[in-house]
Each structure stands twice: as structure tokens, then as C-alpha cells.
Amino acid sequence: MSKELDRVRDAWETLGTSDPYWAVLTEHEFHDGQAKTRFFDSGRAEIRTLLDVLDKHRRPYGDTAVDFGCGVGRLSFALAEHFKNVTGVDVARSMIEEARASNPFPDRVRFVHNDAATLPFDDDSVDLVISVITLQHIRPALSLRYLLEMARIVRPGGHLLFQIPSHIPAVRPIPPWHSKAELHVLEAPSSLQVGENSYVRVGVRNASDGEWPPGQLLNAGNHWRRNGLMAVQDDGRDSVRCPLGPGDHAEALIRIKAPAEPGSYELEVDVVQESVAWWADRGSQTVRVPVEVHAAAPAPAPADDVDGAQAPAPAAPATIGAMEMHGVRKDLVCALFEQIGCTVLEATPDERAGSDWASFFYAIEVGEYRADINHGI
Ligand SMILES: C[S@@+](CC[C@H](N)C(=O)[O-])C[C@H]1O[C@@H](n2cnc3c(N)ncnc32)[C@H](O)[C@@H]1O
Image (cartoon, rainbow, N blue to C red; front, side, top):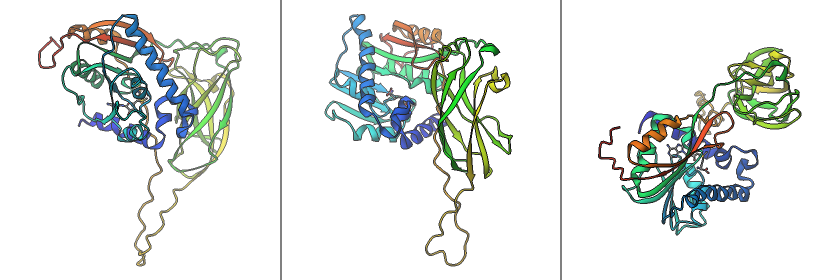
């Protein structure tokens, strides 16, 4: 396995072990496996939206579907209502285990762990591959390999339905007179161990008289201060969902990491337009909460450690892997499929990657693509 796939797998393994339902949709209500009915209902709605595209083009579904990057099975289970055989594939064993444990359709749905750059299916063996909010976390070179793999495993006349971001449109600076936020800390830890990961939940209100437009890399972010001085300038970020009109509210959940030195800190939250400005520098009010950062607790000495030998270093606190975002230009995606004899039925703008990205949903009809033939790529 490549180093790149190692990294991707390890990041998702950590997320799948610590908070899998939240990691899939990154919405607060799904933390710790809460609101599962709504979680799986959202999968049904998503599959209905995807299959509507095949209906619109009057294409049959077939019997066999693959859900690439299936997570805990949100979409795989919904696919089982339309397909006789569904296989969910995921790079994280922890996600696959959770999906298997709650599989309501064991006779129709199976889950496969796969941490290779190839897909574990024969050529032309499935009717449909779907993939949403997955390729956006994979670097472009690897995403392109997976797209070719999807075309290989789908029979001629079958379909791929997937979403992948294209690029971040050029950022237009929000004018200083609209860079005014009112911030409230809704939830924050009062003490942490050095280097420990946690979250701070903040309410953000547009306190200006102008709209904050979408796609402008507007984030809530945090600093750490000690004795009033900046100790850590850049820590966590979460996007502020825009557009946000004057007086409108949004919530952000910032993943924070406690500083490396123990001490009494203030966790300070501000709004930042990336590559433009932190808004405190434009006169916007930040918000601060006190956080005690403790040295890591020493591990208890083993019972038979009677000779004064040094106790082993304490285990590092659990860390949550980062979710990277990547895009593949729409022109390149379309050209790739055309080059291998597939038909692009749709490449339509899509909002699944959030407001900062130009993202697209693709419906591809697979042609006579053979991985062992040089199609000029
Ligand atoms: C944000 S979740 C989305 C899950 C599912 N598609 C849904 O919408 O409910 C992304 C999933 O993709 C998986 N993933 C990331 N890279 C992958 C890869 N190279 N191969 C298979 N799965 C991958 C992650 O482990 C994670 O479960």
C-alpha cells in the first residue's frame, strides 16, 4: 500500500474509532451516535436524489451496486431498498465494523474493507457505483485512479454517480465595514491535557449591515493566549456557513488542540477570511474562555514495579484525524471519461463540499472501457 493510502486510512481509522457517525456528516446532532433515525433518513433522501438522475435519463438501475467510501452504511442501506446486491467499500476497518454491526439487510448488503488503490471487484461485474463526500477527501492522483477503477468494474451500459469538488473559486475580500461578527461560546472544555484534542462550539452572528457571501473561505478559528499574550496564533478552524445576511446566525464546531506547555490559558475565538484577515484586526469583537492546560498525568506504575524503574511514558490522548479537502478540475474529470469511451450524462454544480468549493455531481454511462487496453491515457 502507498504511503498516501496509509495516511488516508489512518486518519479515517481514528475518526471511525472515535466518533464515526459525526465523522460521516460532521453535524453536531450526530455526535456519539445520536439521532440515528435522522442520520439514516438522510441516506435515503440522498439515494433518492441520485437515482432520480437515472430516472430522468430513463436508464435502468440493474441489480448490483457498490458504495465507494461507505462509512457506517448510511447510503448502502438505502441502496438495498432498490438493489438486490449492495457492497459497501471503505478504507477504515472501524467504519466497516460499525456498518456490519447495524446491517438491517444482511442478505442484500455486505461490507468490504479495502485499503488498496484498486477495487476488489471483477471487470464489468456491477451495474452502478455511487460515491459521495468521499473523493473530496482523497488527493487528486489517487481519486483519478479510483475513477478509472470504477469504470473498470461497471459493465458497459452501467453507471457511476459520484460527487467530487473541482476547485476553490477566487476569493473576493469581504470589505472591512462588513467584517463584524458577534461570537458566543456555546460549549468549551474548562481543562485539557497538553496536546489534547477537543472541540469548541461557537455561535456566529453577522453583526454588520451587509451579506457575507458564500464561497469566500470564511472560518471561525481559535488562538491560545497566556497572560494576555498570543501563545498559539493558529489552531483549529470550522467554516461559517454562508450566505449569512445581516443579523443571521450560524454555528461552528472548531477542533482545537491544547498547547504543548501546561498553564492557565485563554482560548480566543475570532472570524477569519483565509488569506485576507482575522477580523479582530478590523475591529470585530473576539470571545475568550479560560482553559487550564495540565501536564499529562503520569501512567500508574505497574504492580510489580518494585525496583524503582522509571514508569513508561503516558499514552498520548486520543487525537482526531484531520479531514483534508481536495478537488479534481471538472474539465479533467469529463475529459478522462470521454477518453475511455464513457458518456458524461451530467456534470452539475453541487453543494456537498460546502460553500467554499465549486463542486460537481457526475452521472457517467460506462462504455467499453478495458483497463488492459491503452485508451490513449
Ligand atoms: C465523509 S464519509 C462518507 C460516508 C458515506 N459516503 C456517506 O455519505 O454516508 C467518507 C468515507 O470515505 C472513506 N474513505 C476515505 N478514503 C477512502 C478510500 N481511499 N477508499 C475507501 N474509502 C475511503 C472514509 O473512511 C469514510 O468512511
